[in-house]
Each structure stands twice: as structure tokens, then as C-alpha cells.
Length: 243
Image (cartoon, rainbow, N blue to C red; front, side, top):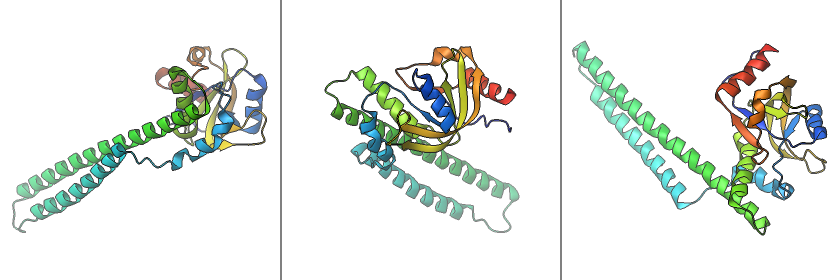
């Protein structure tokens, strides 16, 4: 088996405390999420449609307009710099080199500004969709505490949107300190007629059982899904590579 891609994200996904559910996940090649929320089935269509939510808030429109301005500015300055760099054929090589360095520096600066603006738009888009999930949950419950609302909405959004195809998922098993590790191979799906596994992502299970007691403290039933990083992520990948 080939080595794991260490650039992949790694997620600890809590499927609940039912051994039959984890067995079914392994048998069917899927992973599910359990956040102790009884109205998950009512949210299925909304979760599926999250990617199609059009964020039209004034703040997002402002960022979008700023990006358009940045693009226009980039094109105008690029054309201007190319005009400046045109020198007579008999110009000293040193002068030509200086002009190229100035152009390269300006391009790098503009490229970085555009990157930062794209990242800001991406984060704001995520924030808008996360808030949309909160609105949906609130609309279906008489009351919910803010802490639980944040946990539920974050888990739902993360499971459906932040987990990408190719990412690793680590699923706790019934045996204390044991986990299954797999690679995600499909997007979020709602399987209407399934018994326990209705909210799923397709997974290729690489290791159906590895012993990793250090990971126990990362399990948080209230959150449902946790991103693993640093030494924990490195250790999981090492275990997968070595076995």
C-alpha cells in the first residue's frame, strides 16, 4: 500500500456509542456523524443545499466589489509596468535587469493582495453558511442553548463541507483506545431509507482497527467531529504507514 499524503486533512469523527453503527460503517464503506441531535433528518435537504446558498449580504457584496476593483487595478498596473519596461535595444543590461526586478516585485505584491482578499472572501462565505445552519436549527426548536447550537452547527457544516474527498477520517471503535482509519471518497449524502446510517460520507477504510490510546482525550461527543493536527495527525499517519 502506498504511503499516505501528509497534506491531507485528518478528522476524528464520532459516530456514537453504538457498536453496531461502527460495524455497519466498516461493512458499508461509509462514515456517519452523531451529535445527539434528533432533528438531523429534517435538516437533510438544507445540508445538501448548503453549497448552493447564495451569500448576498452587504458585507459579502462589498468584498466581492473590492475583489473586482483589485482585478481591474492588477490589469491596469500590469499593462503600465509592461509599457515602462520597454527600453531601446541598446539599453544597458543592468538597466534592463533593474526594470525586470521592479516589475517582478510589483507583480508579487499585487498577487499577495489578491490572495489575501480571496482568503477573506472564503472565510466570510463560510461564516455566512455557518450562520445559515444556526438559523435553520433555531427555526425547528423551541429553545437551544448557544453553546450547543454552536457545536451542532459547526459539526454539521464541517461534516458536509469542510471534510474533502481525499481527507483521512478516524472513527472511534467500541474497544477503548481503538480506531478505524479511512480515506473519504465521496460528498455528503442523505440515505432516506437507512436505519442508522442516513447521514454519510463514502469512505475507503484503510485500517479497520489500530490501537491509539493517546487519541482518546480528543473524543468530544458534543462536537461530533474534530480536526486533528500536529503530533496527533502525524502519529495517526505513521500508524497507517507502518501497518
